[in-house]
Image 1: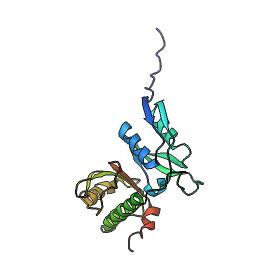
Image 2: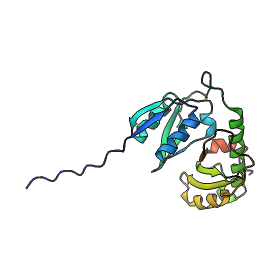
Image 3: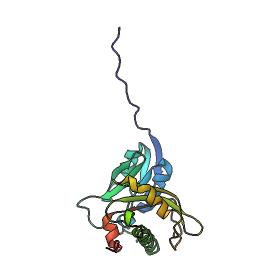
Image 4: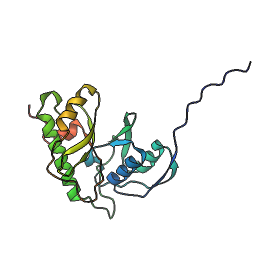
Amino acid sequence: MPAARPVRQDAPAVQHFALPALPLHDALQRYSAQTGRSVLYDTQQVAGRRSAPVQGRYTEDQALQRLLAGTGIVPRHASRRAVSLAPLAQAAPPSPAAGVPADPARQRFYGQLQARIIQALCARPQIQAGSYRLALRFRLNDIAAIDGLQVHASGRPELEPMIHAALSGLTVGASPPRGAAQPLTLLITPEAAQRHGGCPS
């Protein structure tokens, strides 16, 4: 009787990518749209950075690694279908790539968006921002209100339903700037919450 062969797990799926070098935020939005994978990050950390081109057949992880090459940003898995990004420990502060100035309108929009969300979280003591990493993915509808919200609170999954209830339908007071892709992704770290004043004691 022949020996049983070990069960071989399926290799990660490979697909074709044709992503040019782009402002990093735009490249990540295209990668997310193609793969269906949520990519979660602090928008201030990717401002002024530019992706590497990704041309050819790769797994999702290989394509993301190539896209991030040289940016000083690295992937960190948050859940099965979501990846959070973080800067390298010794990464230098972001500087605009040659010929690619940072978009002031986009920076203002994301700053206002983050401040509005932190304000809404601070209004509910049980979910105040600043003590956990919060990843959000959503669209803004015609009245600039949060719609189709996905929530991932690192280490605090019990807070996710309350965060979802607090932020769904929240009006943020500004529409995305021209050319901004939706859905939007936002990562609110304790450090980002402090930059926006944190929650009152």
